[in-house]
Image (tube, rainbow over all chains, first blue to last red; front, side, top):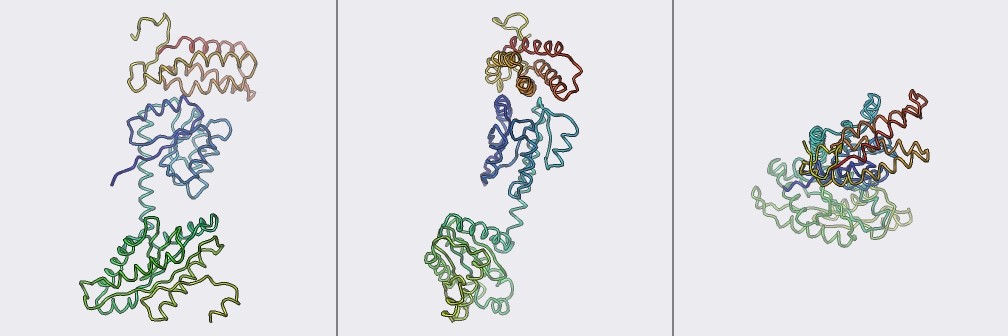
Length: 311
Length: 113
């Protein structure tokens, strides 16, 4: 894989320091972004663009480094970014305070650049490790898709975007039909390979921006941003047909099918993630009850009058 | 040792003048120094001591990195005197302050790449 250069943020009010650090880090494998104030630094990290390490000056006019450090470490989205404090303040109290606020390291000005480079490389190693662990913690070991934790986080994020900007959003929930029978008749390795193949097939049929996860045992879910319900239903149908067409080496005479529940909204709604799941789950149940191997588009649970009509 | 034609006697030369990674930005930095000295002097004349302190602080942080540790130390001395004064711990009078300032000014003005 082509390793993109990690982004290092330098936050210092002095343009002299910007030029100096840029020249001294010229040969390092990193992209340096120089910012002049604490406010700019927070705007940058909070925009969500990836930052691998922050070099943070403590003594700046306006918002000082301690306030920036506190804000970065108090935000769950940014608290893992290693912060190396760079400061002319060499007092022990300042160092203790910086470390207690969550600084990864502390270097004093004027710099010894061999030392700064070494400390920066150490911080970047830690950042890479933390990222790797965070990714693995959200991966399903069997299918390679996102796991339940990943699904919950991504669904929540996409539902927020949908509610805020009114972008279309859809959710597909798949459940392999008679999965227990596959396990019982052909063994658990056969069941495992059904899930693995199904996961691969789903990834082939969806866009890079869609999010496929293993929701539960034999349930796989796909979050489809910017997708209308009817488009999502068409994706679900493609996946259903593709699974049905697979010939299985372990049981060539026995094809595997899936039921699928779809829910979606074209204009902004205020349904929380739990209601999205509930609606998709009800549609999936409907698909199961009406004979399996089909896609059913569901609706959000709404006031009692509407529900009674459906009965 | 780094004497070149054109640098007048007593000129303060950057320790990094021959560092290929640094030469360009050292030249740029040196070209800016006299203006900074003027700014320092001007702030001092109009008694804006917080501004003097700020400028001294910046020189302290950057001069060492550009190969002028002596200017950096002079700036550090001036800054710490001003910090002591503003927190009421002043052990030094304004004479000492003036001496430290003029030492810093003349060092800034004698720098060469």
